[in-house]
Image 1: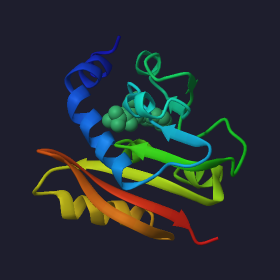
Image 2: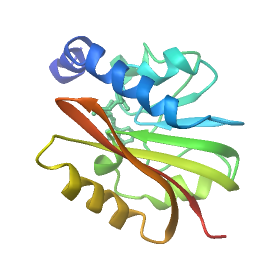
Image 3: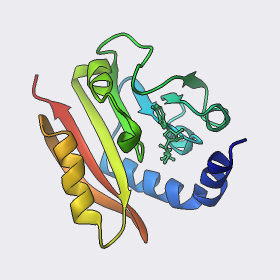
Image 4: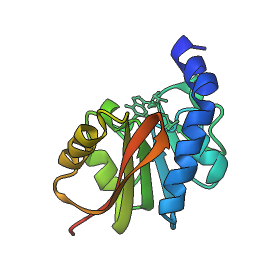
Length: 158
Ligand SMILES: C[S@@+](CC[C@H](N)C(=O)[O-])C[C@H]1O[C@@H](n2cnc3c(N)ncnc32)[C@H](O)[C@@H]1O
């Protein structure tokens, strides 16, 4: 197992699980769900029906039932088939964000977050929104304590 995967899965477990719990308090995921960059599957523990995608096989092994070894930059799914797409602390790793948009249904929502702290949170939120500047931002908020996540919930205009 790569060191980074193990550290992430073990050391970050409680922090990440708490942030994900808080994110889910802000939204009610609907329909078919995709998690891009699922990591060790903390979201899938709470949403076992989510399709989980990651490039790290060791991480992916822990990620629920519907796991797919693939890159968020080239998703092996038809267009517009997911109603809710998560990308938690992984959007900065994607080169091709059009893929997220491609697989999301017309009315679908994307929940995207990036880690930050008390000092960087406003700047990180601005960056996140700039990455989705052609989208309608429905909600924006922060979760966590100490290690935070800036989160946006957004959907396309058309
Ligand atoms: C910081 S972790 C976040 C994991 C998880 N979303 C969470 O909140 O616990 C980032 C994850 O993105 C994955 N990743 C990196 N590049 C990726 C890519 N191009 N496509 C899919 N996953 C990727 C990494 O393997 C890692 O598991």
